[in-house]
Image (cartoon, rainbow over all chains, first blue to last red; front, side, top):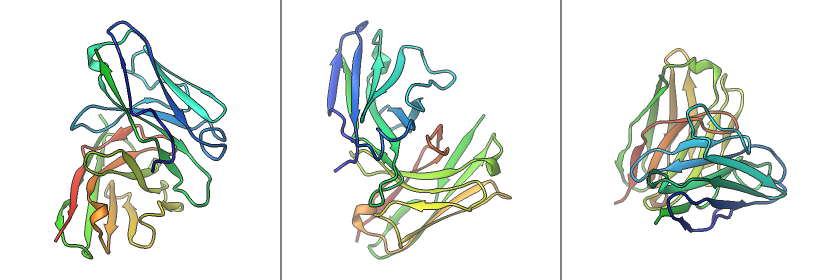
Length: 113
Length: 116
């Protein structure tokens, strides 16, 4: 069981927008602005897409945006493109004494129809 | 260009040991915290361990605490993970990743298979 909850799958048509949610607790997502999002294509290493809730690393398309409200973070991809089809993982720093210091969501498979 | 190259994976029997290495280049290794993250076949990502730039702070996931040891050699630009008392559930691709609160660069991973 993953510490952060993500939907198992989302889908959208090219050009549309989709949002992936990531729900945690006040000890992780809600307590720190250290939420990040990773894109992983099959057989490849993860790639950082969003850090510190809403910041994009250099080179990441501005079609990707992040936000947070309470204990839930969200990744929005606008203007869906075929190459966006991948698995997406959220991650958060956590201070819970019984969990790792960093936790991931279970991952969301994005299908571009 | 930042590069992280893992090595040392392979097939090991339950209860055995393995030492993973991660060779870093393209950045000032001694200035960055480093991490190990693993991914079991067909499963999601799991953070394993982190070490601060000067090795002053070290953290482990509960699932590996007492069995795995993270270390680094800043003179050799290298990160290590000593894995002892390996279990079947440790089977995964192990990635090294750079960063403190997020992981901005990842290696290609090395596969560890624990099986008799």
